[in-house]
Length: 77
Image (cartoon, rainbow, N blue to C red; front, side, top):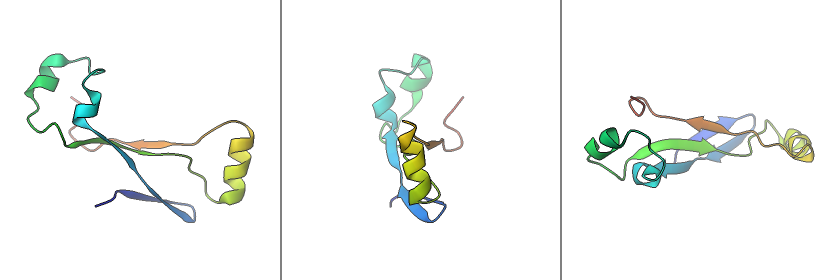
C-alpha cells in the first residue's frame, strides 16, 4: 500500500525509509538493537511539493525544494 499526501491539487507518493536503512546513522545503538522488525517503515518523505505547477516552477527557479517528512508515532524515543 502506497503512502500518499494530497498537497494543493497534487497527490504525491512517499519515498519510504525502512528501519534497516538507518543502521549506519542511528546514535542509540542499544535502542536500535532492541527492535525486532528491521523492515518496518521508519519515516515517509514527500519531495518537491508545491500547490500547483506554477508554484513548483517558482520554487525550483530559486534553487529550492519543499519537502515534508512524516515520522509515524512511536519511532522516536
